[in-house]
Amino acid sequence: MFGNAQRSSDRCFTVLYAASQAPRSRLGLAIAKKSVPRAVDRNRIKRIVREHFRQHQHELPPLDLVVMARRDTAGSPNDSLRKSLAAHWKKVSR
Image (cartoon, helix red, strand yellow):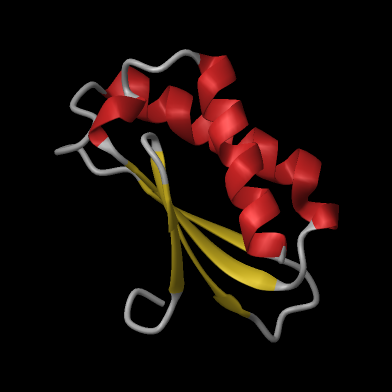
């Protein structure tokens, strides 16, 4: 996945995506301890990404997605994380 995927990046996340043979989109998370040191922050980010993906999964074409957090993600409020994810989903849908 990491070798031949397309990339979408912003201040909070980097999303790698590639076409999939699965009937619907699949999500993978890579939230590194180096980027987000506190476990409570990593868990909050993962929870937000999973929930946002679940709510918008039907709008996405069949893709394999890997969401990676960047350093600025830990201090960002939940609303800005959701807006960032919405922008990524819109970009990968094209």
